Length: 255
Image 1 (cartoon, one colour):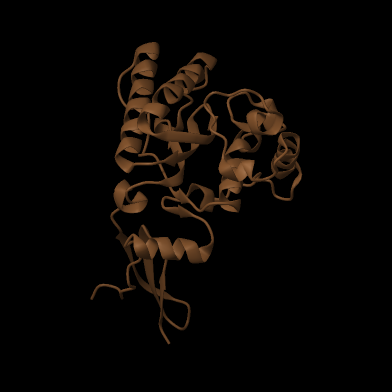
Image 2 (tube, rainbow, N blue to C red):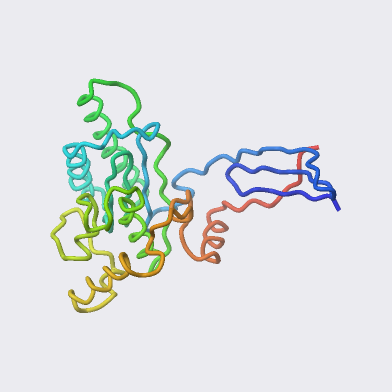
């Protein structure tokens, strides 16, 4: 029997394959990316925000640029109803795990923060044009273990990049706040972290084990943590995609 093979959205590759294995024809269907509100709804959720510099250039590599980014996030988060559970500021991108209360306020938070960063960098370098690349990814994160796993994943980003041997060696992340109790005004303690133990010392120990010693510990790049839409158990992701109208019925190739 001839076979149709379809790759996942948003870009779907459809192959018409004969029993012999010969590919007779193929089509690429580009699905329009849904709006942020279509994915996030009205808000009141946790998202993993990722945004990259244009062409992945190292526009944030200087310490004073990272300090400026940190200051803007800190300045804007409260007035936009945003809590930042975890973060890492890299030299060409940044990650935030964010609790938002309202999608509109969250969009304004991103627009102001990243707009100010863009103006700062262009003035600093005497350049014009884009500072950030494609729009920020903001997949919704299922709570509990998926939230902690996402925090661990982003805090190990400098380790995966070969910048440090262990997460505690990188200054511009939330790791040392959670693992060692270092003061960090940008961080709002994650409820999942607080639920690890009633003892501060025990919580920190468990978090260090989670990030530094448990098998895997977020050292491999895993696509599900940088998804466009949802991060969680398979059943939960399917449920959210159905509720948000992001699951389309399969169709055959064009005639």
